[in-house]
Structures are given as structure tokens and as C-alpha cells.
Length: 211
Image (tube, rainbow, N blue to C red; front, side, top):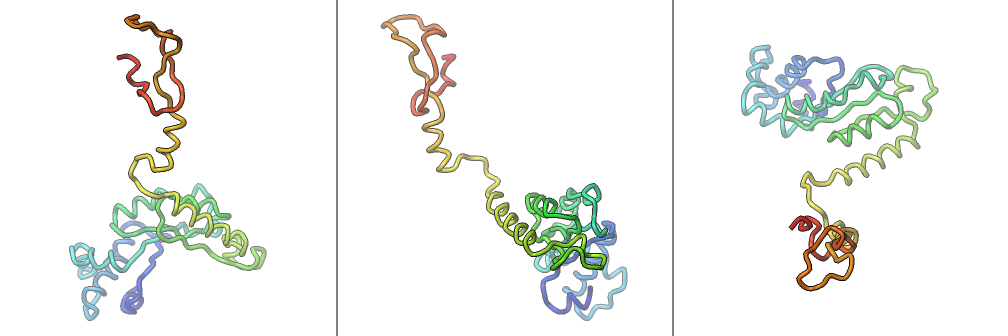
């Protein structure tokens, strides 16, 4: 970890088999190396670096943390995608998934939950010998996964809940307005039978019905 940090490259740190305490140790070691490349990395210095505001700041610019279940393949019930949220809240860093499940459902779900990075094993043939093959993707499904993730990135959009321009155009046509259900004489007391709702939605809102 220290040597990788001192390379100056951005780090993608997978947390397979790790507890939160072990994640803290790893991030503390990285923080110490970033803050003082010459510092002796004993445990107290590592803990102090991770606890410091400067340590947290340098980590944010250098590290993405991946949740991971280190089984090959990993069954869906062992993956616990919600742990990505735990890592994000605990570390304050961008998170992602190192995925060892079969198929593309789990990485797509991770992208929808906000994964900034998805790591997936690649193979030319899932039937080849070796421990990783069953958890890998061949070229066609790998391509499908990437396309799906790109679509999800677009679909995530904004957290603001407001109708877009296209929805506003649809609303003008699809919503309804208060209208007379039948001829109404001047001075006539209105009843429920006199009023109905019809498209388009460019007139008086149905919420005025009880007025």
C-alpha cells in the first residue's frame, strides 16, 4: 500500500475480506505516506494520520474504496451492496464495487446505488480452468454491462424533484382542468353533477373543485 501510494498515482483500494477497522488501517497508512513520505509507518503514526483533518483531505483526492466479497463466484446473498453506503459514510471517500458475482445484475445495481467504479473480471472463455473464470464475463456480456452502466449514469441525473421541460409539455396535454359537465345557467348553485374534469390541463386546476 505504501509503495503504491508513493507512486503518485490515484488508488483504487478493494476491501474484500476486510473489517471497517482494517479499512481504517489501510487508509491511515495511505494518508501517512501522502502527508509525509519519509515518516516511519508505525501504528500510532498511521492512526494519527487517519484521524487528522489533513489526512482525510489528502485521501479524498487520491483514493476510491471498493466494497468486495472475496468469493469466486460470490452468491448474491453474500454481496451486501448496502455496505457501499456504509463505506461511503464511514470514510467520506468515493466508493465502488469489486464484483465477483455471475452475470451483470449486481454491477448494474451497484452503479444504480452510486458506485463510482465497477471492477469486473474479464475472460475470453468462462469454461477455462482457474478460480476466477466463473466470476468473469466474456466479451459480449462485458460489453452489455458497460452499456448498461452508461445508461444508468445518464438515468441517475439530478436529485432535484421537479418536472423537466418535456414533462411540462406532457402535463399541458395529459393533466385535466375543471370544466362544466352540462350547460349552467347564470346564478345557478353548482352541484357535483355540474362539474367534471377534462383534458387539457391548461385551465383551472382540479384542486379548486371544493371551492
